[in-house]
Image (cartoon, rainbow, N blue to C red; front, top):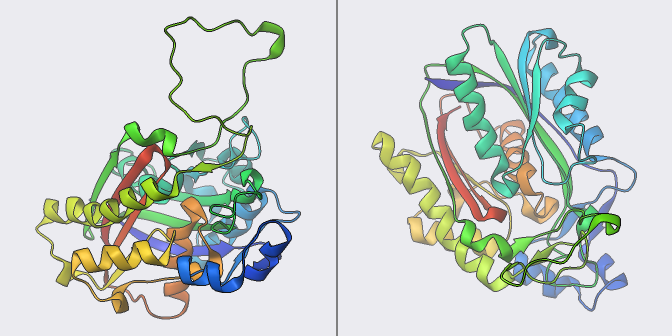
Amino acid sequence: MGINILGMGSYVPEQKLKNDDFIRFVETNDEWIRTRTGIVERPMAGWEPTWYMGCQAAKKAISAAGIDPADIGLVISCCATADFHTPSMASIIQNDVGAANAGAFDLNAACTGFVYALDTARRFLETDDEMKYTLIVANESLSKFLDFTDRGSCILFGDGAAAAIVEKSDKLFSSALRSDGSGAGLLCARALNTAEEIRTEAPADFKDSFPELRLHKLFQNGKEVYKFATQALPKSFELAAEKKGITKDDIDWFIPHQANIRIIETAAKKLGVSMDRFIVTLDHYGNTSSASIPLALNEGIEKGLIKRGQKLALIGFGAGLTYGGIILEY
């Protein structure tokens, strides 16, 4: 069983930061950022909470699908930057869009989140005969935990949300999800520590392999993440493709995680695929984590590049270190 994407929607914050705006925080310039990343500007939340952006994208997806939100059976929010530890972003979105009969939960696979969520939705639809639709929302506010003194990371990220309504279908679908937890410390941000009032000394043999971090701030070992990413993107496609005997020539569009233009170009070269077949939106979105793939997918649909019947390869990687690919017919 596969899925059919009935409708999509997106939302990005009003505030846009161009490369030269980062001169306020770090020593950099437009040329330095553009040539190393491919990013020109990125939306960053000023007043918008993560859940609000997700709600706006979800309402657009519901409208595009032309469905009654009461018929949604499940809401999945893939999010690494939730506004609350509890409740989930999914529960807030579920209420706001009127999906009164839906279950709801958050899924955190970082930048691979939409790939994980899409596969999770397919499995729920396959096993629940009464479920008609699933709403997937990727909503992220990376700016919340950026270290604006680190020019190697703060320039890369943006905020935004994208959503999709999916239903069960007999269309082509193949997926592969993976994680390499040995690299968890290469891209991370800590949550709250144990309260001072009850904290005790750790035993001598306890080892915390994570780097020393500024509380709540994102840490990235750029060199090692780059090495992982350039391997993970092509591997994500290959793992999903081999399940169905699919080749790169069968794919109309590759839609990768939008982290860095050099990573995408390297992945394309390793796959032997022209960049003309890659949807690239990071120049104006930056890296929006789990929202990057669906933002690119939605933009490709809105521009008429992606058409019904075409075969798409969604390939991602992210903190965890997670990676995964989905091949589907749109």
